[in-house]
Amino acid sequence: MVAPVAFDLDALPVALTAFTTERHLATLTTLRPDGAPHVTPVGYTWDADARLVRVITFAGARKARNLSAGGPGARAVVCQVDGGRWVAFEGPTAVTDEPGHVAEAVRRYAARYRWPAERPDRVALEMAVDRVTGRL
Image (cartoon, rainbow, N blue to C red):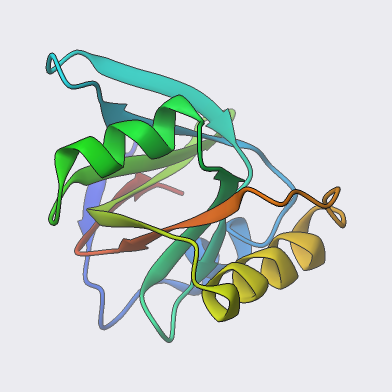
């Protein structure tokens, strides 16, 4: 059995990049205002160049409200699992409704999964990844 490892963000293995382009859902963990974890399934994209994980959602979603309530620096974790392979991305995560950021998140989501239905209240969650762990 291979133990999970913390990966070097400056030298991520090719297998990690490949795994994050396969069509898998993941879980997103945020913290509720009372400190309890909230875990929900999400589609996400990994932008290795920008070191960003992006998730699209709507402004009233619990995950977006949790992150907004957490203020600047609110942390989250996105974890993708397939059998014994898994990867987890961690970092401070912001909620944005800025049209350019939302459009980029939608474009990347559509390339990995499918084109999402239009929503006037769509927002993007942008995680500035500072830790990656997993087993590939």
